[in-house]
Image (cartoon, rainbow, N blue to C red):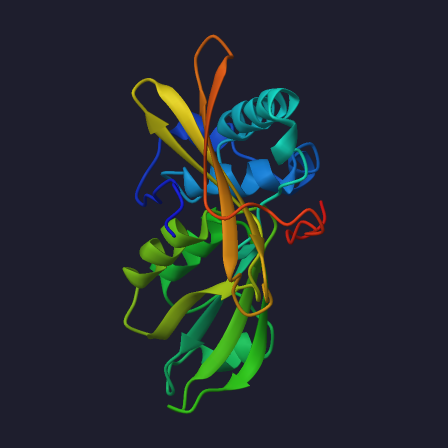
Length: 233
């Protein structure tokens, strides 16, 4: 069953977008739901604080009017503060990273990682192809797909670049713009969610500009004994 999820963009972004980005300090003022959804709507490597605040307010409005979705929170597909990079064997600066030194001999890589507030590089061991896996950690929450796109263009030293995926499945929230309104999809999942939820009930909620909502439900009826599968807030 397909959920209505917002698309992820890459590329640039204005300087004003970057000034109004969510930081590690300000992230404490948002729920994980708002941060995850705002990240998916980002067009830059930084997450818009204005969009996160708007989503936070909209989620509050929806939950006040639709009690059935009050306890539905979305699971994170991947960590917003880290990514996995595998560096090809023979790369001149690979020993620096193995020793925890986060700079490289390639200025394009250094510039992108500095712009993303890189704070730590840690080796995860060698790959089967002879390269080395590293986990890169950032000070602030990042729109990881956009950062991966930028890094891929900087160098041919990468064996691979990927999100730092989380495990399991659970409840989900999606968001997209539709006909001048905002369409949210709240999904309650149950049945072996550690491997991938077997069943889902979905509330599609159209939030209009005047604050009113229209609700459309689909999927099997939720079991009254079902507990929300999302990670705790």
